[in-house]
Image 1 (cartoon, rainbow, N blue to C red):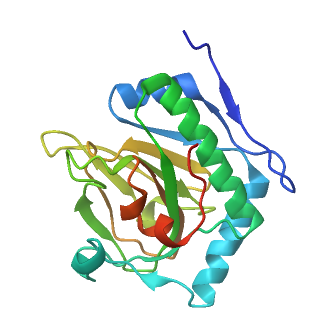
Image 2 (cartoon, rainbow, N blue to C red):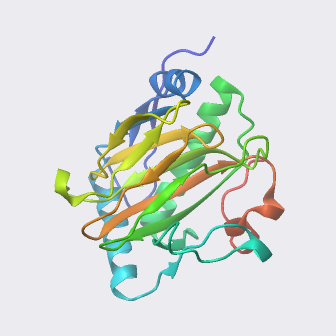
Length: 230
């Protein structure tokens, strides 16, 4: 039996990094299938926020689409965010990818989900942007298994929109989460329908996915040397 664990990781150059009660996280994933927690790491979160905002200001993000490879297309009626894949090239990215790797190991030890690798991208929703209801992975596809979203928005108000809306089995809205700075949401990719409501100001986040052993299909892993399980 695995005892209570506080997940904590401090890469070189940053201090005060995230801590999670993994028993609570895994109990929620095994139950309703999602959980939202607040991280108190100011160094890493601040670094990631600065980087996301700089990428947006430098017009270094790409309009996001849906589908993969030859089926990939931009559909503005479905989603209007802009993204850039993490490649571990900055201290903030390195810290977040290392944290995600530790999270992967802890979740696998408790829930045996077969999480193998992690990919993530910055996501910016400009005023008027949204992402209609969807699943992060088709049921039975077993590519993306566990989704994560880290929010990087200080002083976010209710009227700013951009909420993460989570649906239940009967198409009812279970909850709406504000994209507040330091909030981390984890949910089962095949099981949790969700959407991003219209944002009324710039909204910054990092969306990530723990995947099964399908390296050849993962867009971020095809061209970047991200951490891979041994």
